[in-house]
Length: 200
Image 1 (cartoon, rainbow, N blue to C red):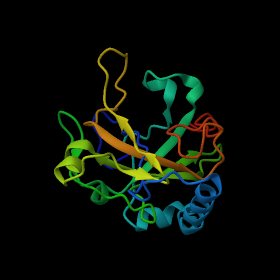
Image 2: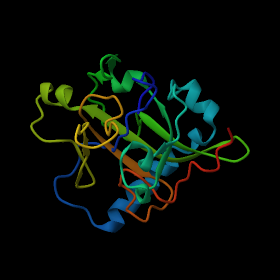
Image 3: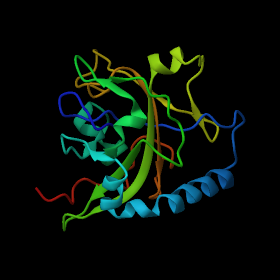
Image 4: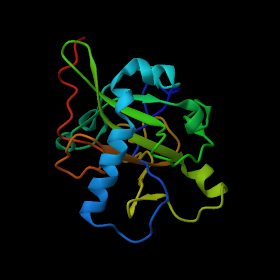
């Protein structure tokens, strides 16, 4: 999620580009993910990500589903490094908002890292995010989609404990996991990603 946050919590996203309207077969999805994985190899060195304008979530949070009122078995997301310019961030109060409509996964707005016990960071996926209002004002009547899948919609539900949108205005987002995800490599959380190795 983003370089400027509200309450120190990064918005969790599942983003993607508005590409095909017809669902693609598994082989097509795997091929695209492999293409993206190869294109993102330079970001395995986090200093490269920083040099290209990505900044860590200021909260330093390693995102876990269970910490935000969601079932813990969904898994973790890791630590988000983001490009505020691609997200089009405009305000942080009362909630984080932006006007970006960026959907190109070859230049993702967000990089997802898993912290390691030795303090290193391992790239495990990427993400894009667009705010609903900005997306609709740009003339879109449907959410963005990627590989035939609509991006996930995220907004806080006052009936559920915690802030499911993490201080962000309603948005669409899409994750793409490079580490095999039992829930699917386009799902928002990944049970195979862990925040538990993080050294405090």
